[in-house]
Image 1 (cartoon, rainbow, N blue to C red):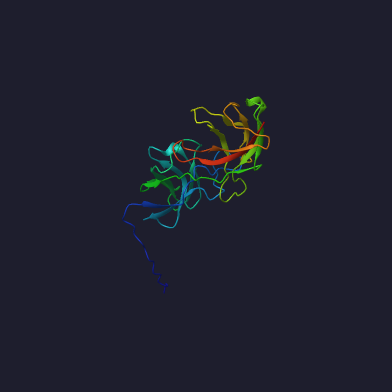
Image 2 (image 1 turned 90 degrees about the vertical axis):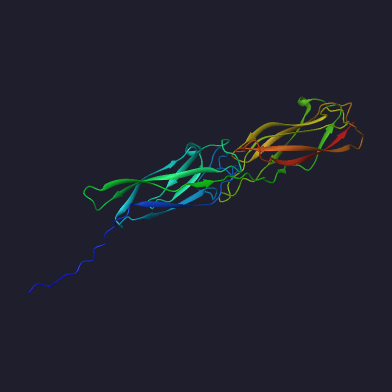
Length: 255
């Protein structure tokens, strides 16, 4: 007498589908350690988690791509379970506060089929809304001494400005440029100037020049007259619309 065997058969009569959830935020100013782009090795990315429906346990994800009008603005890193990390493709192309609508198309292989049946599934849409933070700016010196007789950029004193650039989990900032001026005598013309000499993206540092442009407008004394020059610090990745970082450069002008 043969032993009987009972088999449980599950019939899936619904179409395969995928739904995704997006989690995380992208800060346009938090870059890779080189200060020239973005990295998935920080926490500055959006994670996409899929939930596949009406597939048996033998499926595998063989391909992932973004879909939508904004797909070329982003880069992805995907994993075997179908999860994705999304980062900006390059700096300077996204706007903080704007919604970028995307979806994901998965290529799925049914490993139990003859040779493995290939199907494609496109997810629901989701939004990525970048932000732009305002980093703290520090300087190499508290105060510079200028002389009223040393007029012009060629007689400038120099110093360094810094933005945070030491935490890979939070991302690195890099200075694109820094500039500022002060109209001492309120005639509508700049009398004290701050300009960028050079920047080092890989260290978050910028060397700036500070100088007297109009000696006649600046009050100088033997002990020195103090001024604070407002400076705008523009970081790599800025969208050109959101608020930039700022600081002040303190100077004493002597005769």
